Image (cartoon, rainbow, N blue to C red; front, side, top):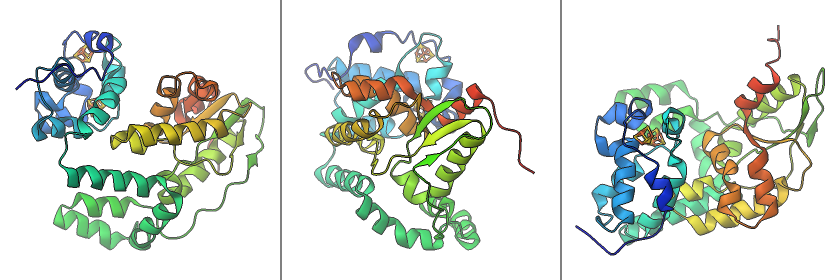
Length: 296
Ligand code: SF4
Ligand code: SF4
């Protein structure tokens, strides 16, 4: 099936893939499903066929792209330096308009709920009441339900202790990091943010936690809502980019990956370029500055 050329992705980025397949073993969806179309190489092939108008986004094609976790393990495995993340993130908004209307509106509503603090907290409140409970974990296993498994993985209803605006470094100062607390991460995994900040502090990093940060846009872009993602990114960049920090740190892989691409997501926005240039994954930064000794 073919359609006119689509022009939604930079063609030169598609052409860097030489189809060697060295990324396949690193891809969790390929390892699990064993289908070429669920591998990085297969998805690049699909995206190229869409871009060149040789294929239209049928539900089957969209499903193979949807199943990509966006983990980017394929990028580190690829010897040709294929920017897979940029390809899949260009493809998601393109295929969005070909979904049936109920699915499209459902995904838009989900993006709006997850990226709006009051709606997100209201949505997570009942789930957090049972989050982390052993009986939910057992039930999820018995029923084989991935949705219950997500609920079981949530941190319980007890509120994480609040983070101060600044955590002064312990020991020899290594630099200043501004911490992205995130949207879903802040609501569902607040204690992970606290642990990240404390660990960085103990490693000698001064940690700044600006108030009113909001979502980085990753959730929206993964749901194909590119315009909403840009609006959120612009707002966050104006908060984080204003700081004089050496690093902008995230402990969520999807958020960190998008922060690094803020410059290309918002061309001509100096605050976004500043965030992109200083973005670091929390674990990568800890590896760089050195882990503190374990506490007794
Ligand atoms: S993405 Fe990289 S590793 Fe994978 S097939 Fe293409 S060139 Fe090879
Ligand atoms: S981002 Fe992850 S799931 Fe998606 S193709 Fe690459 S390795 Fe596979």
